[in-house]
Length: 479
Image (cartoon, rainbow, N blue to C red; front, side, top):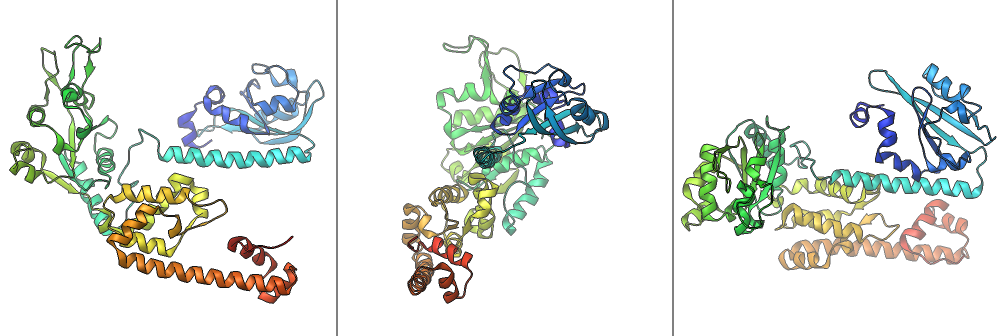
C-alpha cells in the first residue's frame, strides 16, 4: 500500500465501509476483503455469485465457509506472501483465488484482499470480462477528469500551465510576492486566470493551510454586499438567519481573501474596505463590540483603476493602499508558445489522459490558434477546444479545422484573413492528398477484383496498412 493510500484509509475496515468499495461491484471477478484474523469485512456481488452465497458472509471467519481456508487466506496472513490455489466452499462451490496480504508503509499487516475467478470461463463470461475492462477504463477516465476539476483543490504555481518567458517571469515574481503580508493587486484581461494565480499566491504563502475565500465583487447584489462581506448578528434585520452569518472577511481570518473585479465595488463599500485594510476591524451588522480578522488581501481587476480614479469611480486612497505589489498576468496572445501545452492540458481534462493521447491535433489548427488574438484568452481557448473535441466522430483520431466551431472560424476569417487563407491552403492540400490516395486504393481494388492481398501488393504496402487506409479514408469495398 502506497503512502497516498494510507492518507485515505488507515485500515482495510475503513476501505470496506467506505463508498470507494462500491467500485468493486463493477467487476466480474470476485473480490473479498478480510481482516488480519481472517474475518470477512467485504465481498462484492461477483464473489457472492461465484461461490453461491445467498446471504452475506461479512463477519464470518474464512474457515467457517471455505474448506481451503488454511492453505489460502490463513497461509497468506502467516507468510505475508501472495498465495494462489483453488477455493472450495463447504457447499463445494469452486474457483481459483489470489490472496494478497496488504501492509501499510511501516510494514504493519492490515489484512488480505482476495481476487477470485471461476475455474471455467465460457464465451459469454469472457465477453462480460472484456466489457468490464472497457467500463472500468471509461470510469477511470471519468474519475481522472473529475479529479482535475475537483472543487476545493487550490492551484499552485507549478500546476499552472505555462513555460513561456512572460509566464515564467510572472511566476517568479508571484513566488516572491507570496512571502509578503502586503496586499497584492492582479491585473489581467478577462479569461487570463486571475483566480488561479490568486490561489497559487495563497498556496505559496505561509497561510497555505488556512482558508482561501474568493469573492466576485461584480456578482454581488449591492443590497447584499455589506452582509456578505462583513456578516451580521442574529435578528439584525428582517429575513436574517436565526444564528446570524459570518462575513467573508471573518471567514478569511488567518488566511487569504480574494476580491475579484474589485473595480466594480461601489464607493460606499470601498470606504468600508479601506477601514478594514487599515485596522483589520470588521464592522459586522448588528454587532456592538469589535471584531478583528487577520487576513491577507489579493485583489484583481481587468479595468484601468487609475482611469476610474480620474473619473471619481474609485477611491484614490484605496487605490494606493491596494497597489503595493502589482502583478500583471500576460494575455494569451503574448504567450502563444504556451498554446500547445494548454491544448494537451485541456484535452486531458475533457477526455481523460488515455483518450487524449489518442487524439492528434493537426498543424493547421496549431497555426490558426497561434496567430489568433484570443480576446477571451484561456477561457476562449478552452471553450473552442472543448467544442472541437466533442465534435470528433468515433474512430477519428485527428482534430482538424473542420471540427472547430463555425462562430470561431467566422471570427478568424473576419479578423485574421491571412491566417484563414494560410490554413485553408494547408487544408485543401491535405484534402487533395487524401483524394489522390482514395483513388489509388479504389483503382488497386478494382484491378485486384477486391482481393485485399493482391491490392496491397499492387500498392506496395502491407495488408494491415491497406485495411487501415480503407478505414481512415472511407473507401467503399464489397465483402
